[in-house]
Image 1: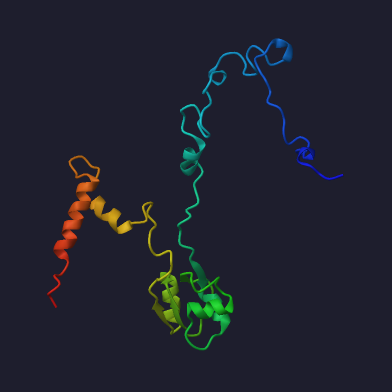
Image 2: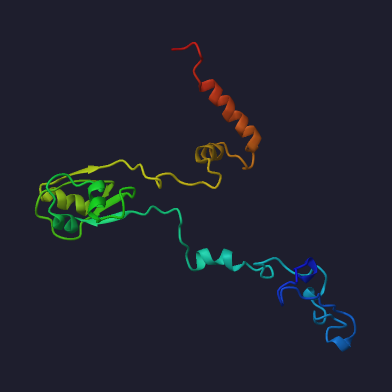
Length: 205
């Protein structure tokens, strides 16, 4: 027998009839229709938004200064002690790329800081992005040399909410939004005029 369109049925339990409320107390959901007696939630449109706690400071705003918070923009430094570098017994300069290849740090894309824990007796040539004062003293006392590298990692710049940190800094210096300060539109016009005045003319060499 061929299958026809009227043979199709939804899965059992997937479709349920709408419950009719307020149709007499014999149904069990008459009169107040399951909403209880009076109160905000018994009214139409009485529900509050998610996270609303009656006007008191909600948990998502209390938590940062009550229990601390995790700064997702923090710089993930890779810390290496001079004792660990001495154990490697490397002949030649020690660089972040070399430490990454040896598995001492997670990767060369992270900034490296050298600390002074451990013993160091042989002179080492170490290149890193930061050194503690005691680590510098320990390395120089052992006859080694250090080179402080310039950071070029992705965590070197702050992430402003507008993603336009230089522009935000300029607007703050012009006191935008302060009493007696210009509006944002006026400040942008002032910055545009200043950039045009500072830009060299086409004919200048």
